[in-house]
Amino acid sequence: MNQDTEHLKILAIFHYVVGAMAALFACIPSIHFFIGLAMATGTFEDTDPTARSIGAVLMVIAAIFILLGWAFSILLVVAGRALSKHRNRTFCLVMAGVSCIFVPFGTVLGVFTILVLMRPSVQELFAESTT
Image 1 (cartoon, rainbow, N blue to C red):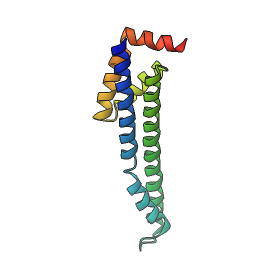
Image 2 (image 1 turned 90 degrees about the vertical axis):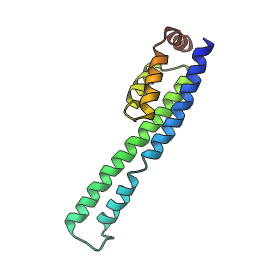
Image 3 (image 1 turned 30 degrees about the horizontal axis):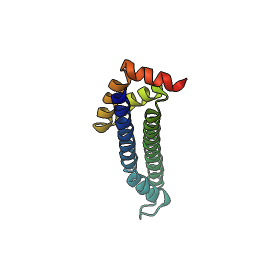
Image 4 (image 1 turned 180 degrees about the vertical axis):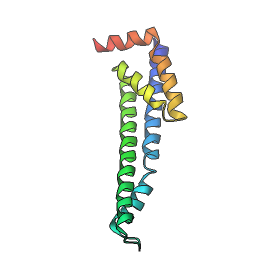
């Protein structure tokens, strides 16, 4: 049991780290957002209505990517917190699967999280904390 709790603590820490990295990487489309903002407001010399429309679309797409990245990173941190408290095993498993999309760090984290959470002793540990 002591080894299981130690593994869960380490996984929780790595969830925090990968969540912070994902939040940082989610800020990259802000470059596109500000270029789109400049296009949409007519800051550039070209005041063509088509360019303004393209700038607005660029802003919307960039904002969607930024918000989805931030939501993903917040959910990773919440999953790390749940792992440290031994609660919401199903949520942690779902987030482990979703984190596999964030290559390469999320993939490694997701695989190891799934491996640890599938152990019968860890399942008992989560069952004990819910009662």
